[in-house]
Length: 314
Length: 257
Image 1 (cartoon, chains in turn red, cyan):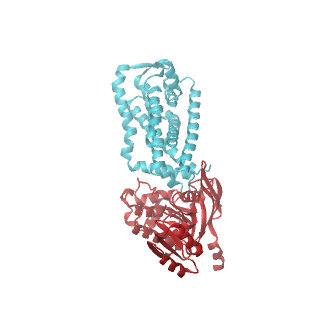
Image 2 (tube, rainbow over the protein chains, first blue to last red):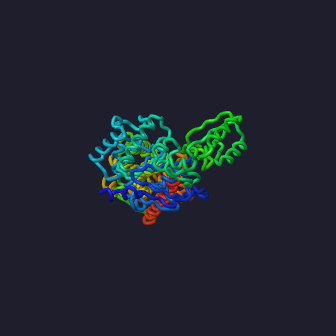
Image 3 (cartoon, each protein chain N blue to C red):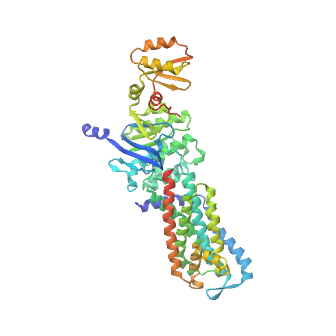
């Protein structure tokens, strides 16, 4: 009955509240709240060192939080409840596969940790290899697989227990575009099967394309969050101008006059296109001694630059 | 600190399956080492030494040496599996990190590794003992009575290996305890000669090292060791201390990375 299932589907399956982690004096994650809902992909975006991996580590129990609580399917995740981890699957940043085992043995032996043994483990391994399109590599050794194939095997391993929550920690870093495309196709299939998915990445285009909600992280905290398109429009506006050849004073004066924002960017500046007076701004810019002038659609990179003064890839 | 017997078993089983992948190569060390030692010392030193005084009576050198070799088999295999094996799984292969994504607690994984290193020590001790039985250096029944002590010794040396894996930062640093502790134990603890022949200060140091107590207890049939209760208690205390310290040090290393 739809009226019964609808509330369940929209309720968060995983909730994290006030997660904090410090190493000595250094605060790496400073109080994060986050919800994951079935059938949705949540992106955690930030530059290297923003605290993304530490956050994910705390969410799946690899890293002990100093403070805060993670609840998965109504159960609190802690070292005292390792069985809670039956509900999650993790694609770790490292390809920590067993180099001594073949592709299918990696899955069969990992299945034992979930009490799936014998013929059942073999059938499951075959099924998962087909799902991630690795069935023709079943007997290969791990060192015979490319980086992209290894990532797919890590994904298959994460799916052994049919998890309700999947963590993808920088899953496509170092992959070529073709391997990344295939990986994302597999992830979008998983999304359709009502899994709650958390993705960390510093690839803005990927996040913008596949995520339903994005959390922007910087210095261990969430600086803003929302749906990708909304986030972009709300913070950076619909369009921005990349310009080179003007000094900061001139850009600041234009920014003040048209009540818009600007940030230094690459060799020049990024200037938000105001809702009103965009034609006048463009005409005024055309009369300045600029070197280059480009108007384009705003994106998450602009949002991040605006919020933190840093680029995502930095 | 939740413990799942199934979890510990599956971690142990994973290591066992890896071991059996290259069974021949892996069995080479525990089998060839005692055979080589027995040939070298049996043929080389036995005729020169003949008999020696131990526990107030005359025993053949081969009878004296065999329990020591069994203990050394445990020491080397348990320590090196606990040290190198665990370090590689922890730092290079990141097996521990992968296992932590399964419904296993840290304690399950730690105990699984500890049990595996213990198994390798025990296997090496038993294989050495079997070779010694075939050589006529010990009686078959004697080997069965060795079993509880071999388990205790393997658990202890495995814990020492795990502690090493938890403390070192590079694979080369494992050489530090090897040269400062393992080699001195192997050479000075009365494995190949009675400790009484050493200068007194060295004798005292050697007596404190755990291999000395284990070897003395394994030579029970040649003469009941003095203060055997203390020696047994010392082995138990060291096992608990090393095990606790190993669990803490690996946890620190794993959850900080």
